[in-house]
Amino acid sequence: MAPTPSAAASAEDVERAYADNKLAQVLYHDWEAGTYDEKWSISFDERCTAYARDRFEAITGMPEPLPYGTALELGAGTGFFSLNLRLAGVLDEVHVTDLSPGMVEAAKANAERLGFAVEGRVADAERIPYDDNTFDVVVGHAVIHHIPDVEAAFAEMLRVLKPGGRFVVAGEPTRIGDWYARRLGRVTWHATKAVTALPPLRERWARAQEELDESSRAAALEAVVDLHTFDPDELARTALRAGAVDVRTRTEELTAAFLGWPVRTFEAAVRPGALGWGWAMFAYGSWRRLSAVDRVLARAVPARFFYNVGITGVKPG
Ligand SMILES: C[S@@+](CC[C@H](N)C(=O)[O-])C[C@H]1O[C@@H](n2cnc3c(N)ncnc32)[C@H](O)[C@@H]1O
Image (cartoon, rainbow, N blue to C red; front, side, top):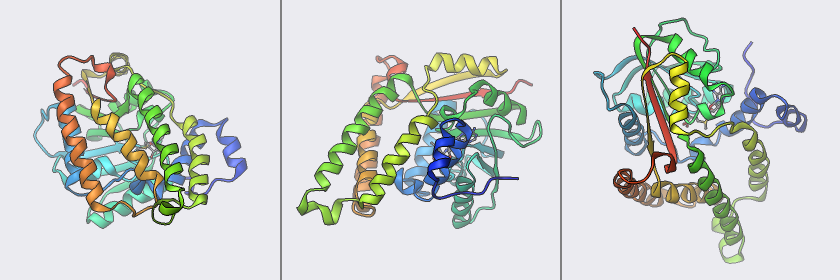
């Protein structure tokens, strides 16, 4: 039977989660599900639709005719990647899956608001509950760094793909990128908390203390759920060992990550709704400009220094 979502984990649950990584994933992501879109500024409009499409294109070069007929997303969260790819005309029939029941419900609710019929299932990417040769494309975003056996997950993606079908996994942290992103995030979190606690700013900007305490408890579990960072070449070898062909990786975001991590942490550390649409557009516009700078820098800077790695590969046949 599928586990039911829980908004709040008990102290005993958290204790057990340290010994059982899959339970930790479910507790942490169920807890995140209700506020995830706000925390990561996820929208289903031009901003995130263009972002999702551009990541997909950067990794694959869009070699096949669009849209892909049947698509599966693993670790879909609230549906950020596959629902925006559907809006962008890259995917047609979307199946969202996640280990966290709370995330599957959130993704289905987002799809319903967008007027899409999507199928949603609770699913572990290491044992995907679909038949062999079912999908034209399997996608994932920011998911494989949570999966204990990444090679098993690639093998499962290949099993459920039709022969010639493609997997596309985007937004995974590189080893070096994760190192600087975490440090930038930590400094921004503490600085924002200190500044917004000052009396003239507190009322408009500070988050409620209980929300900050809850975030701190969640941050302890975050260290348990983030299992991997990747070297792009090693990641490609893992997919090849699982049986993929035409494997390629692509890294992105260097100066954009230097901006993006402080911005996202700042957004999460201030009172919800305090920043508004003008801020969101400013942050997005700045990120786009720096991403253009990064594309030029990519000619000279080694791939492993960039923050994000994406990978694609094809099922032989
Ligand atoms: C960082 S979130 C990313 C969510 C979404 N893809 C996005 O980009 O917004 C990672 C997601 O992977 C899911 N997850 C963790 N372990 C998993 C597993 N073994 N199989 C499937 N999903 C998993 C989590 O529940 C969570 O929703």
